[in-house]
Amino acid sequence: MAFSVCPAGEQFPLPGPEDYEREALRLRECAALEREKGRQIVVVMGVGFVGAVMAGVVADSVDRETGESCFFVIGMQRPSPRSYWKIPYLNRGVAPVEAEDPEVAPLIERCVKKKRTLTATFSYEALALADIVVVDVQCDYRKEALGEVRQGYAEIAALEDSLRVIGQLIAPECLVLIETTVPPGTTEYIAYPIIKKAFDRRGFKDREPLLAHSFERVMPGREYVASIRDFWRVCSGINETAREGVERFLTRVINVERFPLTVLDRPIESETCKIVENAYRATILGFLNEWSLFAERNGVDLTKVIQAIKVRPTHSNIIFPGPGIGGYCLPKDGGLGVWAYHTLMGFEDDIFKITPLAIDINDTRALHVARITRDALRNMGRIVAASKIALLGASYREDVGDTRYSGSEMVVRKLTEMGAELSVHDPYVKHWWELEKQETYPAPGQSWSRFFRNQERLTETRVHDDLAEVLAGADAVILAVRHKAYLHLDPDRMVEMIGRPAAVIDCFGILDDAAIRRYFELGCEVKGLGRGHVKRIKDSVRNRPAS
Image (cartoon, rainbow, N blue to C red):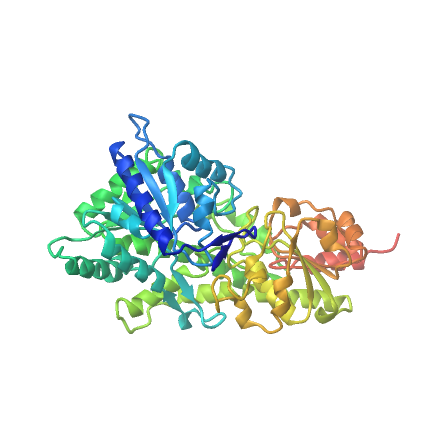
């Protein structure tokens, strides 16, 4: 018997033929009962990082006049060994995603156990019952080389398979809302033909699919639910009926009084909006990388420069790039646009220069952290291959536990390739799946381990919550993420926990000048991204007359 194993290690047997028959009957009975209550049936395809919470937000929504639940939601997940466990988890009222937001767990539990407006299934039978299908099936971008995004391509096979099943099963009046971040043109050039041809084969030749697109602006952290429910949304539909349908649906789910909807004319505009939004952010970070290098080589503290710029209101959103941009969207979304231009639209000229370059720069920025770690150790008479290095921060941004495409992963992989022994601390991360399960995560053959040598032992990586244990005996300490726990670490206490002077690498402007000076006074070596002024502080300490 095949099993799906959840992160906690519990095994769930995959469903057999008899389970499908039972499940189809259960779903039909549920749908009939809910329709009697006046509720629409919403199927959310894909209950991963976005879909699970989106399902909860929809299930928790109520009519603003009556206070009654508007929808009965069925979260649907394909019963694969990798992800089937999410179905029994949800049906227990347990969120299948880890989140710092304290609202996530009670939201799911409330909708499943108290309101009874949310259930989960592995059966595609749910699609035949749906009034609205929300598609949250992952669409990734496959990179074939490190720092060469043009050599990659959009992985849309799973999305296409889902759309084929949708076209085969939904009622023709069902609204299909694609929320996945997709290459511009996907709704019109891929989804529409697939579903339209399916309708034709089913005898609905005179029926137009009701297709819409509205992307998420999900932010991990303590505002996870709010980033779905209480945030601005952009939407569009393939025709007037679809536009009206998606606007009506989102108005009942999203807090549109405070965060009004933006309704665009065509799905390609909504799809492009998400890509441009994220490519813009990635480009600013890539741009600042070159000034970070300039600062390091010319005695400039880039963190002070940025603070001086931010006082100008028009530039208040400028941010320090850190060791890598990370997260699920920024490292790849621009690539979806470049791919769509050539593949879906069929253009052969090369209009994209800045967007792919920014992704390439951001992808490889973390390699520079390995280089300055090497240099700091050399200054202390040590080499990477004979050093123990403590990495503080595994996630991609401060005060969250999300490790997807984190700059820290690239740092660990490069230093491991160079022979270092790594220990990891992060107060928000329990498991670093990109390392622990690198043979299969994020999918077989897609781990960044394929770009480096000497990666086999990284499956033994464990993230620790005892800082003193991680620091003990370290030759170098890398401050990789601006977690609150790292912002005010006392240099004297740090050296005490380490047990001797060590190299300290500041990746995110965490150390102020007083802390940098104190580390030098304690015999440590300090380097940092964009912290070119560190040498001045070092010289002032080393050249200070003895008292």
